[in-house]
Structures are given as structure tokens and as C-alpha cells.
Amino acid sequence: MNITFGALLKDFRIRAGLTLRQCSQELGVDPSNWSKLERNITPAPKAEILERWFEYLKLTADEKQNLLDLGAVSRREIPRDIATDEVVLEALPVFFRAARGAEMDKEKLTKFVEQVRKLHTADT
Image 1 (cartoon, rainbow, N blue to C red):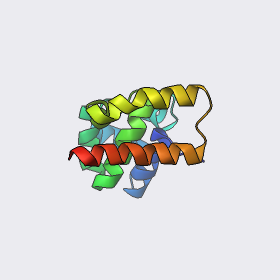
Image 2: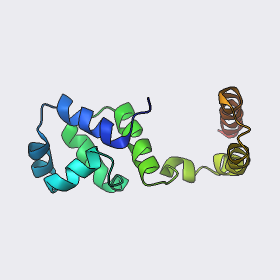
Image 3: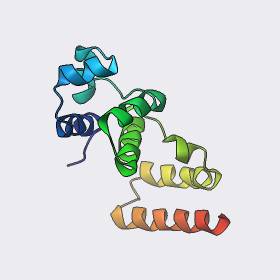
């Protein structure tokens, strides 16, 4: 099962020992809107808003990145760090064509990612 932005946000809130109302009140979000986020009814807010939430929920760097990535997916966006990486952007059209043609099984996807990583590390 794939985790969603809302499910992960809820997990972090519960881990912090907060009720939905406590958390939303502290962060200045209407409880109804927070509930819609946790249930994936509304997409995640932009990264600028999430940054304050990360601090409040005391998330690790990996947890922040995971929530940012899931947030981008919920908004149907490419994550900002990827969208500004020229090497990755050049490789994405190949991925899109393969994905649309259903030619990319898990093994091919893994190989594709490895190739993109090699391209990227060659320039750095």
C-alpha cells in the first residue's frame, strides 16, 4: 500500500500526541480543513506553509523530505528540487514516454533511475 500525504501527516500528528483540534489550532488551520488534508480530500499546501508544520511536529530531515514529496504528488507537481535539476529534467521526457506506453516495469524503472543518478553524479 502506498502512503499518502494525508496519511503521513496524520501519523506525524498522532506521534506528536496531538488531537486534530489541538494541532490545527496551534498551526492556525481550520479543523475541518486539517481533516480534509488528512483524508486526502484537498491537496497539500505549498512547501512554504509546510515548513512551519515540520518545525511544530519536530520532523527529521528525511521525514520532511518524504512529506514534501508526497505533498507535491498530491498537488500533481514535480518536487521543486527535481524540477530545478537540469540533468533530471532532460531525462524526464524519456520516462514520460515509457510510462505512457506502459513499457516501464519495475525492473526498467529501477534501471532508469540508476542511469539518471549516474548522469547526475557525473556532473557533480
